[in-house]
Image 1 (tube, protein in one colour):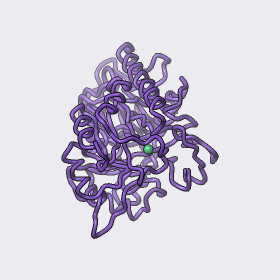
Image 2 (cartoon, rainbow, N blue to C red):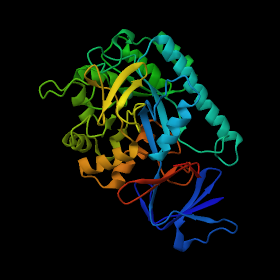
Image 3 (cartoon, protein in one colour):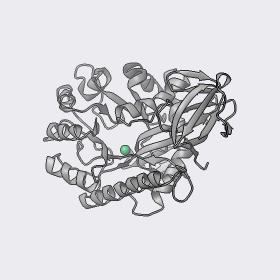
Image 4 (tube, helix red, strand yellow):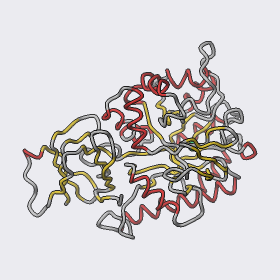
Length: 397
Ligand SMILES: [Zn+2]
């Protein structure tokens, strides 16, 4: 058994002052006030100092970092990405594909599913909860399929020649290639065949997210009726809001059946729009993503997003004159949301932990509570991530 003490704990919605957290086999088994609880005999306490313990962050939309892309066919890509994620507070994530030639996408899905399954096997076979190689890092939980079922009009930088209309047969092909590990899918609801594919994906437990879409209000509502429950990088790669023709954005911002995510890097959205979004979706339905690409944590230069060439200058990733992902990290997204929306840091932390776990139906994560995985961050008062733990084991910084 492990024990952790800190200055304060955010569940994230409740506060526990001077907590003592007991962890057994990677899970939280007890949270109490330190003053009222004797440490069990034989257990030594890791004192995290006068800092805040909060649930580890969950990134539902990330393509890469540290010079690597999740679609890279190299053994070192995912471990490097996962180490960088953990350095910025992310304890679990959905590796996210971009539109590519069909065969390349199928191969990437198969590789990602293999990697997810290998981590699950490691976790089951190791008593210490760390990996076979003794290190600890962020866990891939499932795959986010972003494209090819997206709109030509709102494709962003996804290659037009590889976009496809959704069909059940194609979805089944992706599903099989991914060993059933697709947990999230971005789709444009106005495409022919979209409602059927949305319904089937939702039936299989996929979090269907509306995005890269030129849908009008009615088509968006049809997507929601079919089973969509989220929206992808709201405002970006979407038909703009028109006050007489509200379109997809009018639906995303007003329909309480939908949660929605944003890229709060100060580039993809003006801070005033982040505040507008946060006011519209509120504390429970606002989700932070990074949409980070391989250039994250690297100097300016030329990088790749899937097979797309991207030029990175001063925090902007550009391709064909359009934004192509971000170099955002989740710790910065949390601080930015607090600042832009005038939220307190605790609320912003929930948008990176509890909220993504809820929308993607990730059990036992995103909260610090009895029975949850002991995935947590140690935060400074400013929201800097000082330390990150996955399953109670510290990740290397
Ligand atoms: Zn993306």
